[in-house]
Length: 78
Image (cartoon, rainbow, N blue to C red; front, side, top):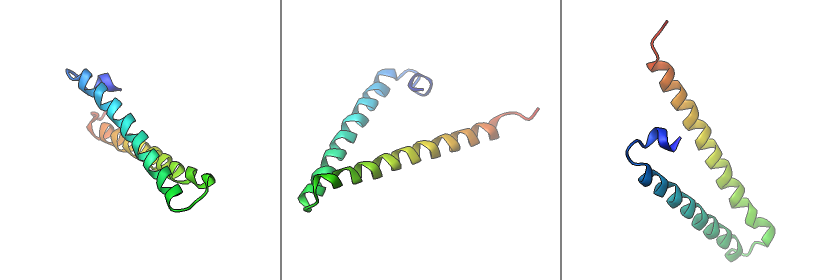
């Protein structure tokens, strides 16, 4: 998928993937740390992780649906 969407900029696209991974790790550590700072036990550290995972999966599914809809509109009628 990266090579299809980043023609001529594959290295920049790969760097963007690494940046997204590092940003996700940092946000996850921050959210987990905030749960501990707020006085919750270790059992509740997984709550923000579940919410972040759900939002990431939802945005991925929404992106796929929107992209498929655009491709169907552009496709010539036969």
